[in-house]
Image (cartoon, rainbow, N blue to C red; front, side, top):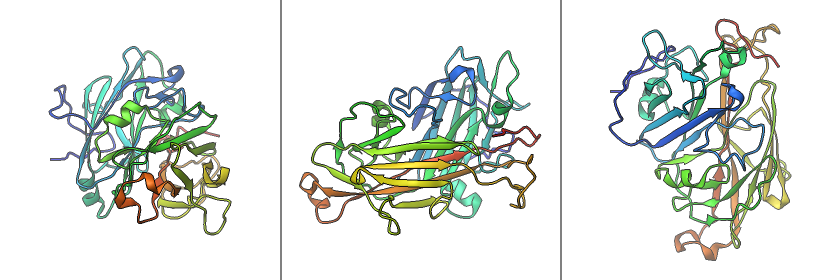
Length: 359
């Protein structure tokens, strides 16, 4: 039976060991400078290669339908931080897009003050919403020990997880290229693995290797209202594999972008420049959706910020220009395309009690 979290995180509280392995274990979590808004996940991300001053959060894509997913989040001991619980001892977990409502499809348990288990049932979420839920973003609320939290920490501090529900036919295994030296503000796409999943230098190689075949890691960033974020995705496949970003129909100087949720070109995506003959896509994201009343959608007074967040996931289409002779026979008869799926989380700008993050 799948328990449903309320806005206070009503979940099963247990200290028992899990009965089955986790699909993804995120351990050793720290916080840069002790700031709850700057969580670091050293077992997921390669921070030597990751673009600096960008807030990366774990994000996964469900590649095959019908899986119940199990996640483990564990904060490193000695951080002076613990997972927040309600008066009943249940972990406080919120939906980014509806922080004050229930999170259908989720069961959570705080195994100890530093460890939280999440069980996600996509079919239960779909049923509760009366349709296909494309993407979900969760916030595990944390609190500092021995000090009062700062206002920004109350608004959007803690741990995040984005779950993109986009089952798709697997692509070819084109191998993995050499990452070379890191480039500033750039994520390199190195190729794909035996399951056709894109491989990025942003993630640790051993983490990507250990993922079950029905799950993929997605580049996911967290951006506050009014922030400007410039990040490039560079194709760095192995020699002989000529993969390039496709051109947009309306503007050949831009990469072809498909919005998954919401559909269409994301309004915050101001640029997806196609550079280096299609080997590079330069993204500019300006998180400025406008101050508004969160219930009516109407423009609000300057001091009123949104109480709900947003999440956008889109994909950049690339095609294999040359190198068909290196592919398995079944792939040589068609134009091979790959889809690279960035995801952006915009947390709420205010808490229900009126504490806001101002620009």
